[in-house]
Length: 305
Image 1: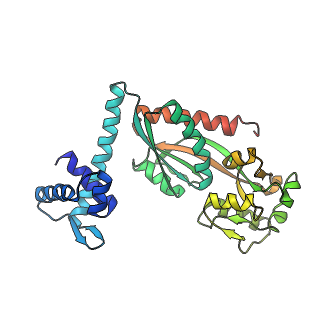
Image 2: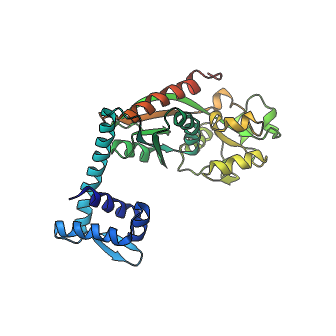
Image 3: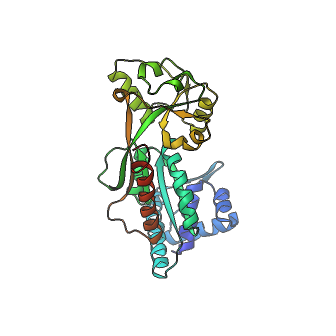
């Protein structure tokens, strides 16, 4: 079984159709079919069923997919390690993150890293906290940057720091005049919050319950950080976010952040994790060390700590 056929088969699975796989690989659909035919001839079994909407794996295809996915992942790691032996300062690193706030914290770090290591390519995937940990444990991604993540013995936490979630609003908002904000004052105003699949929303609801308060629904429910920020900047709603995730807009005066009263605080742990006993390439080690230092500077050594 040739490596090219493995790559084509894996992309076919990911894309879900011969045409889309061909476009992604920058080859012709005929070339995709040719590689698929070689695999089916080699194994003596049909691997996919074709239909008007794309392809579907057969039972034999499912078995092969589990193996080729693992082979491709291990070959990618091997290529990276060989590049390390050759002294090449290049590579590819994948990070899984959950939540808009975590990704907003990650963006300035990756921007700074890219200036120092322009030959290292970084892939960032988004999903749930559990999905991020699964991706790392299964070797799909090298790192997970998460908030509100469950404990998972398959991963090792490289960096952990508490992050406070604070009310964020327009400078003209009535709450902006407060030095700190009580939860019962906050819920008297329109809020923009994510839905209850997000950890920050569940933490907010739990805090309300603990205080004997109730909020049927926020004025705006959206997982889009961009939408939340725009609503706040226009004075239409108050957000609950880590200050760091909107630091640029606070710096320009479009938004302000005010702390909760001590008894009303919402705090989560920001965690950078990688798989236990997973070999680390040069690129992974560089990013690991850089992110650890960057997050320490921002979250542990910053002016608010």
